[in-house]
Amino acid sequence: MEVIISGLNSYLGRRAMSNLHKEDFQVHGIVRDVDLFRARSTEELTGTLNKVDLLRKGKEFDEFKLHTNADLAIYITHVPDLGEMVNLNLEVITLSNFIELARRNGCNRIIYIARLMDKPFIHTIRSVLDSCGIAYTIVLKNLAIGKGSVLDRYMRQVLNSKYLPYDSALAKLKFSPISALDLLRWIYNVDWNKNFINEVIEIGGPNTLTVQEMFRLYRKNLFPNSPVKSIKLPHSIMSIFYKKFYHINSEDLVEFKRLMKREYPIDNSHWKQIILFSFTPLDQVISGG
Image (cartoon, rainbow, N blue to C red; front, side, top):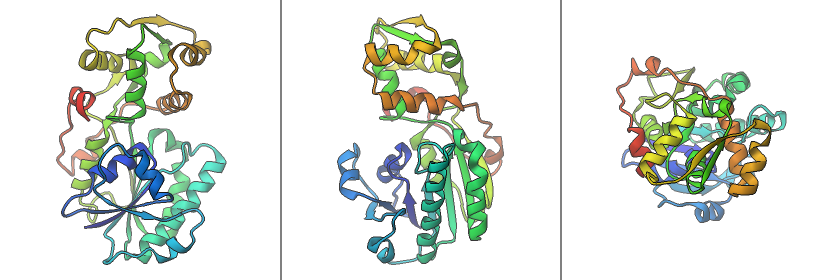
């Protein structure tokens, strides 16, 4: 199977270029700056990288051609938040151009992968896909976790400190984080020619837990002797406290809070009626992948 994939600058996209390629699943990634992508990669790349600008098009876009027809095209959300009009307009342009690129390469099946936080705006994306007449599946996923994810970096930085400041709203928020490697394995195992055609489906991990419980799992598996102590703070001063005393990258903090704002537990029963799939235990995800 020949697969074209875009959205490589996302966490899931970066991991896809190192973990989705198989003997029978040939991955062809497209990215605006190949050298920059390689420089930022922390895993060995297994898929093929191609320089293509989906926003401005240009020569590389016009000349992109696989040796054989593509069977599947995967588009991972390019913008940080579909809720902002400028971002949504950019997404519509790049997605439309991606569909054009896929069709030029004989592909009429696309998977659009977004986050739960994008759900209120997904009708716009669906309208684009419907108007193009291409067979599609929109996948809304819980927070993807694993080595190098936003949650992983956040937890490790906090656990290396003496105190954990928190507010109740964030600590008690429930979600179903999914291993990025599990999600890629799930994509590989679905028969996309038969299943979920023109549907919107949601997928989450095997366990529902709070942010506070996730912190405890990290502590148990990675820092069992960490002296960190919890301190309850008003929400209004949380960001100031983190930036000043914990030196957490401000972009990481903003992205983490934005992602968590609209997370909720996912019921996987719909797609589990169609395919068999087993998840990696969270302890193993935290420890290794």
